Length: 412
Image (tube, rainbow, N blue to C red; front, side, top):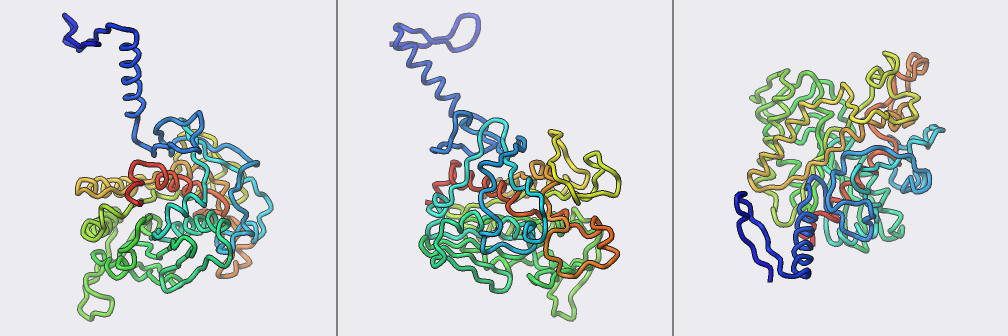
């Protein structure tokens, strides 16, 4: 048998081998240990979708975009019956479709290809809820488009009730919901249709009115960044209906955002079932309004852009890393309380994609003026994303975490 002892003069533990078999067995144990103790920054990809290039764990957020017109897009815009006009770029006149064919390639592994049937089986009898603003709705519609082709028309439905939109797959007894709550806490922007409010009023310590609609979710996916970019907001203590409520206009945007995250964190800490509920927070979705960031002319934006940014490590100047740090700190603090929230850092991979926004190719809820029509850049949407497109990759990453990481047993 193999024995162990202290190697003289080194203070290190050594191994003595009395047979070749013993040496090989020990080598196998050591190799297996190091294989299983890899970096835990990404989900472990152990499935029939794992390729020879996949590592036991890898960072899914570090990589590059690769043009792939054979296997992408994963669905067709016109075949998704739940497509919203805000993101239907082909329907509204975009003639160039390269934006649909870019595949995200992590550096150290392959991103698992989305398998709608496998995810629906994982969601059987469960509820997945996206909570947030129109970018989270962008991701929710992407998810529904990815799933619905695997469900016969008679076995699916879509209903809208107030701030809640529900997609239901009857055969699986599964629901995939979107809940409109752009600031996470209560505000005067909570109407899912009429919410274009310049003077935003926030009840910074109030969340229960909306959060009660998420309590029974098995998976929650949050986002909240874009609506906090206003330089000033009004904080409200008391109710909107109260005559003695206190209003205070403040300009400390990051501080106010931190306060809202505290309210959100406290609610999760009290109400979330740590055994049964899986939590995700999407990082900031970047926008492309300043073309000088990527070396183009000042005054330009995403309009007429048809190629991703190729400079690896690129960050746009409009990407607010201070806000991202606030969200990351809130998530770390929750982890200290024993509540795991998986932060999906899709910011940089999305920042490369200046080509993938609707620009002018979307439904305009107010017709552009003659002045705007003369300068399409002035009314280009460089915030949201065409579908199929970038949010499909967000959902592929979400899929990887739901299907393959070490916490997936909580959903079973």
